[in-house]
Length: 138
Image 1 (cartoon, rainbow, N blue to C red):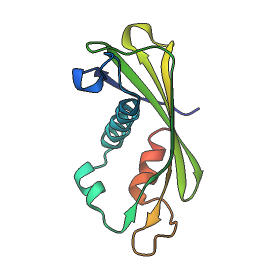
Image 2 (cartoon, helix red, strand yellow; image 1 turned 30 degrees about the vertical axis):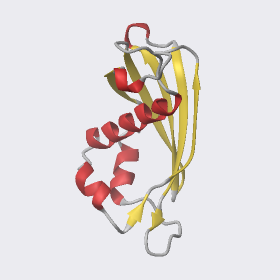
Image 3 (cartoon, helix red, strand yellow; image 1 turned 120 degrees about the vertical axis):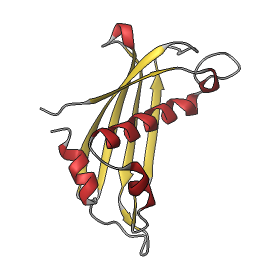
Image 4 (cartoon, helix red, strand yellow; image 1 turned 90 degrees about the vertical axis):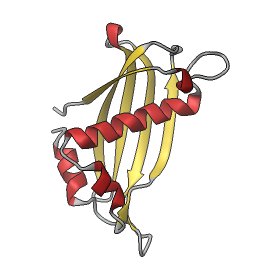
């Protein structure tokens, strides 16, 4: 059985919109923060990882569903679980919940990522670092 990575974070004022709730696009930004934190937790040096000019890992699909509003000052936890879809692509499922009420999702999101060679713009296998990151969840 695979394990998930959990990222804890408060909701800041800049995350919210004029109605005082998390702006919809910022929900995906929160998930991306959790993704980056999971890379670091698995031992990846983010500075070097994102400076690698030989490959890129663009997000090819993103979706998010909100079930409850999140307000400035709320503390949330984001659990993420990556799944290898093929040698060249993976997806990450995210579940957001209030820290004090774990298990009751306040939002769910999904991102799909494809590894490409930056010179040819064609698919390529995940880098050794990303393969190591995937093993972190096994």
